[in-house]
Amino acid sequence: MSVGTVISQPISDLTFIKGDPVTIGDQHNPVPVLVVEFWATWCPPCRDSIPHLTDIQQKFQNVTILGVTYEKDVDKITEFVKSMGDKMNYTVAVDTNESAKNAIFTPSNARGIPTAYILVKNKIVWQGHPMGENFETELQNAISQVESIVEQIALPRITESFDDLMQKPVKELKTILEDRGISIVGCLEKPDFAK
Image (cartoon, rainbow, N blue to C red):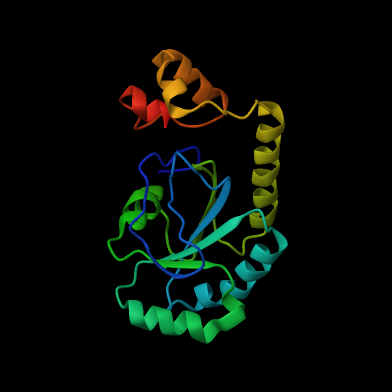
């Protein structure tokens, strides 16, 4: 797993402590720009980066920042997040099954925490320290990339019913999805494409 890798298997088994739940790699409703930051309560550099990530979240409202820890004590983490209050004002989750760790962190050969990943439509476009000098620049580049994609697509909204879409050939359904930048990974049968 490295820059350029697409997260194609949804990671939906996180335990959310703060913020709205996010499925990493959700092909049907992906978050356009997602920052996944691995951290831990016992890590001083991680604690130092928390106010910075809160500032970034406030500055970039169209980005979702997701702090992920794979510590096992959910109660301890919940207390820590509560104690941080507004200093930790972004989405926080516990990776109790280590699915995010095993899908993103470990394969990327990360050397320690905190490590952040910027994902654009589920594709890793940057990896590094969340307080690194180029983090914010790379995040702005990711936002610009999404805005450019949206401008280029400008395709009409699909208003046909499921039954109408089921009348179309699979090839046409694939084209409709691909033209809109929607992944067809996991679509096996015609109803999968129509949904």
